[in-house]
Image (tube, rainbow over all chains, first blue to last red):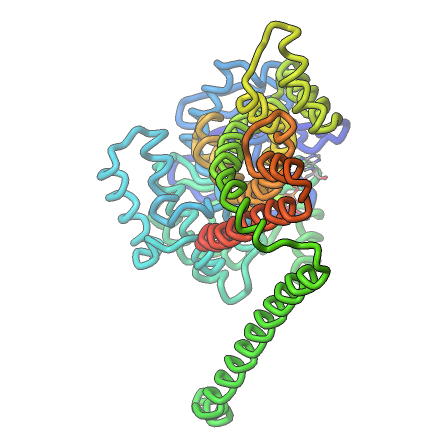
Length: 250
Length: 271
Ligand SMILES: Nc1ncnc2c1ncn2[C@@H]1O[C@H](COP(=O)(O)OP(=O)(O)OP(=O)(O)O)[C@@H](O)[C@H]1O
Ligand SMILES: [Mg+2]
């Protein structure tokens, strides 16, 4: 997966200022940076939930250029859909579909979008529910799940599309502290199994454990990146050091 | 360890049960008093009316069946109008939500026009004015059409608000899974919007029962028309109007009951 020269303006607000990010197969990349530095916007630009102002995104050989002027054209939209099939996204607030049971949540897109037969989709759903430890909740409605269970179900739902890369936007920041661990454990397992992922997170311990690489963003640019030990323990940049120091104080 | 200590401080089983029983008793007392007051008010009203000496019970029994026979017509008007209104409101809401300026303007114009003019005027227009343009409708279809278009306008706004009330993240999650826009709407947004607007549709239906009385002006033989005919023929409008009022009242009570049950059913599983 690769992005090149991603820029994003919200009106006059220059939020991303040329992001070049390359993520290799089986790599787990953690993105850190202070609030407002553009981390969420970057993830949303990668799967075109926001149309970048310029630059391109390439996932698994498919390259799509930012095309803000023709964002509504059919060809562009179909390309974006293909990118989204390759890049699954997890949200801070889970966004499970409340009118569907857990298993329906999981098979909806595989049957409709990938065109899998129901049986195959169910088999897939069960496999991933088991992986996130929710097989016994398969017929519950999201309303009856805890926050941690909801996020794990959302992870299983994304996995059912068998994407090439998973994008996590602060997947644990809406969770009570005692529920964070169960979600991070699932993610750590995925990382160790070699699932390619980009994770925006404020959980530094988790980044240290699970990341192959840590990326520090500030003001819409990548200031520094490298192995977690280096970036988190011995950053080259003054800004990174300031961020980490302030972060550890609070 | 600490768990054992905690459980010793908890109230005993008996105490919990006593509390539950007391709760139940006070709930029942509330319900019984509630029903008694209702009954008292109804009887009081009936006795009060009887005591004025202006009400003729024999006449009520005589014309009652004739007026009651209008109930199926009233219900027919209401059901067909609300169904048609739902269809119109769906189209209207799609228009109001559409990025296409032509469709959006048409829908907005429809809502503005039909909400901005009196329902009575619209009903009379369908029956009396449309023929001048060569569209001659029987009284019943004219009445249904007028009610449906009027309610469709109000419900357009309700449906639109319902769709807008579905959290943004739902669409984004669906898109992120690769669903096409039409699938996002059909499978994710509309089903949730439907739950959100169900109570409001129920309210509209109840309002429709009462507003349907207006089509008596066109001579549709529904409840109010029958009450009016009998009242004027025998110069006893008090009795006939009372009967009509009670019929409408009972219909709305029955409907509210079903509405509440439906709402409770739909609330399950939600959030
Ligand atoms: N939809 C939007 N419209 C306008 N401005 C936006 C929008 N989304 C984000 N922004 C702006 O873009 C900037 C970056 O926001 P972003 O959410 O990407 O930051 P972040 O790094 O994810 O922060 P946080 O850690 O708080 O989640 C902010 O200044 C924000 O105000
Ligand atoms: Mg963010």
